[in-house]
Length: 194
Image 1 (tube, rainbow, N blue to C red):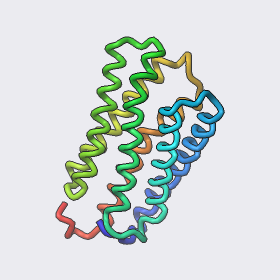
Image 2: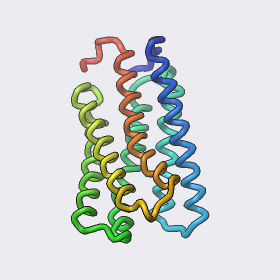
Image 3: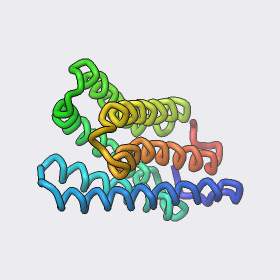
Image 4: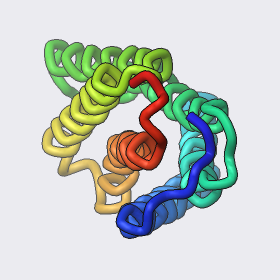
């Protein structure tokens, strides 16, 4: 992928991407502040910091995509998201088991998270194959969303609206990356070999 200008018909999509990225960044910064106000754990701090960095990465990419050359900047965003999923995968088993979820449900959510993480890595490896990469990132976002919705439903009595927003911001970030990829490849000439 090389840096090209986006057609005027796609600019409204970029406006939505910027809005989602700004909202996600604000939510992740708020979560980071809350993390430092509570009981600090290494995993909690790592997750909060990586979440802020992942949102900043996609915001920077969306804002400056027309000036970037090559696929390296986009891969940086994808790997930042993979790092966020990876740290959540490490943390989730420990965290959600403390809320009294059944072993089967905990295992199912962990499997969703593991597959989502693997899908994001495969997405990064298949950027030059449009259909495969779209499938991998769509699968990652859907599985992550399903896992988060199950957790929200099962833990509703323990969480507030802010926690729900933080939880949903992770799959929304995946969808934002997918939409950024879709818009970008549509704005590229047809010599990409996709």
